[in-house]
Image (cartoon, rainbow, N blue to C red; front, side, top):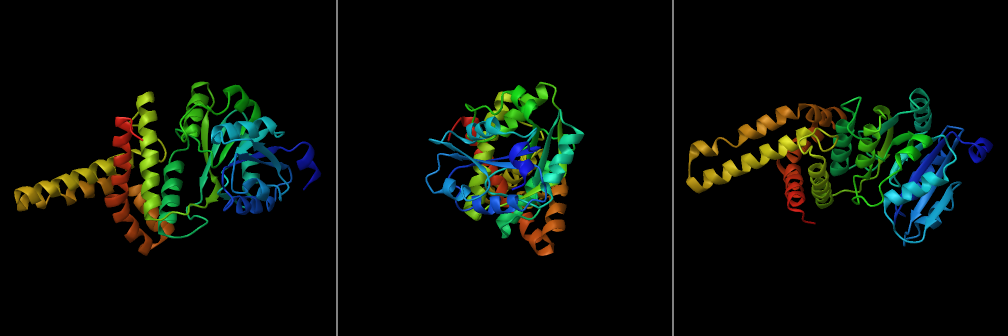
Length: 328
């Protein structure tokens, strides 16, 4: 480890981990391979029971141990309190940085030290496979489509330590997810600009299958709707809670209802209508559809389009309804 890293690092990389033994070693391997010469890594073990802390302790990192699980917000705040760097770079324990990532973090911080910058996932994930690739492309497209995003995700968040401290940090009494969205909105309300730096990318270990992919859509949609009801912006185009996905869900449900109604009434005319809402939804989502083909290739795109238009939106819609009803 460089001497500068030990004494006065420019960047403090903060990594919360809870029962992340399957990925924390991969994350720290990549981080220790960085070509940056002025950073420290702080791993915050959030009451893990699977040996995550023991794995992290084998690397040249500063290890902070919480005696019991307190949640990602508390873990990140604990890491920030220990940080010596001027810039904080938050990632997750299932994220993998490239050798040059921290140089890009430094550039973003030095150009706009009073603002908060966000990166994103690489279009192709660390662990390949249809559902992992689908999720990574969708998130990359959704988070980078605006230079001034609605929020900055904690899988690649760059913020000055002084700016972070003035904000009060992450809300430890907030929902179990979306704490980065809540912090981003508070930052913006206080006058801090949110900027997207799409060149700052981390590859993600998703470990998704069909069930986990749909469960992820359901859970995130449920909490997004709850938060959006509080904020009064349920129709906002906000990153992965995109207006495109919301429109696709509405179109998919409309098509399904038309199909069922056509079956019940025996009307051939009505049975011809279901493709129309789906086609309209795909037009509204032309950007992400193009991203599926561009990053994943033709065969992947041909599989991703029906999944995105017929299956994934139903899980998101079910989560949205649960959020409206206040159900778990």
